[in-house]
Amino acid sequence: MNKRLPVLLAAIVASGVVFLDSSVVTLALPKIALDLHAGFAGMQWVVDGYLLSLSALILIGGSLGDIIGHKKVFLIGAAAFGVSSLLCGIAPSLSFLIAARILQGAAGALLVPQSLALINTNFPKEERGKAIGTWAGWSGISTAIAPLVGGYLLDTASWRWIFFINLPLLAVCLWLGIVGIREVRPRQTRRIDVGGALLAITALGSLTYGLIEGSARSWPPLAITALIAGSILGITFVWYEYRQRDPMVQLGLFRTRNFTGTNIMTFGMYGALGGVFLVLVVYLQTTLHYSSIKAGLSILPITILLLAFSRRAGALSSKFGPRLLLTAGPLIAALGIITWVRLAPGVSYITGVLPGVLLFGAGLTLLVAPLTTTVLGSVKETDSGIASGINNAVSRLGGLFVVALLGLFGAAQVFRFGIILCAALAAAAGIISYVVIRDPSPAKS
Image (tube, rainbow, N blue to C red; front, side, top):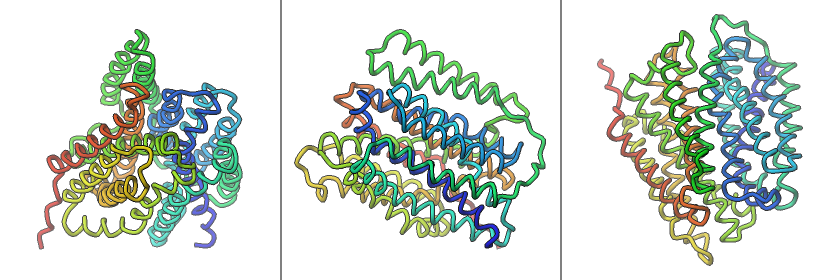
């Protein structure tokens, strides 16, 4: 285990940096907007620029590791994430920052899929479970400290430091990767689905542009044209993938009822998660006048609940089946979200914010472990990697589209509309789980 420690540390640092960056940026949006003179549409682009390239390219990132080697792709991703983080930190304008965020998302698409793959290829079977458990535990710790680190940096220094802090971490990551990771020669000869990747990013980019700029600029012809073009490109993507020998997305997996149901539920629930965190964190700082660190600490109980009880939820899912938890979790989360609709200046944290945080955290805790188990259990073991990748991409796509939709009724209505939209999505996710997902049949003795 000791000689493989650098591999494990590299995987933990890489995952932690990507998560820290994506979550802390939301916390920093009010200060970024003030410094770079951005309206709400600009804030949407700072979040969605990253999600756009990450969600469109993450499956290609996983495939590249299988084709040319996980170590090589990991090191390229770490270096690219460092360079793009530096560009974000020195951004002189909003448009420069958005472009750098798109590059950062593309680098994350190379980095994220390799983390677990490196553990899988560098650790023997008997040590793999313990290594993954350690990786998961430290990933949880990074989730918990993100609001503290981010809030402290935002309150004591410039928002630019949320990007600069990545540089020493990624330097350590590169060093650990170079000296510690053993490259495993790829066993499969596969082609990179370049056409699928181009169709995906142009379709998603067109739809995102149409939704954000359309609502911000009273629906000019260019925004409407982008929405139409994005829809056509999306349909073309499905047709193209269906005809490929090595597709980016294996559409055949969606013939399985539970795989389709869990991915529809993921889109709704993680869309609600991404949208509600954005509107709540911004509202707490701009309307309720919370400091950055106080806004981050306000949602910390969600992370504590996840860390404390996710394993118990997984055990309950094994005992009673996933359908109950995947139905109850989103419905409880929806109840928590809707309690925030009446937030107004002067309301206390204990009576106005905390009840929703606890309900939302409880709902999320009930569904996270059963969701992963159900996705992987709905496909053959040989397809577990691509199934996990698709579900990961779907979760980010949910956030991408919901964030793009938030300005639909104008900046003045963003908070109220966002709360209602996200509560409705979470509730719909619970209903879909109840209708579509089926518990596995008990094994016959």
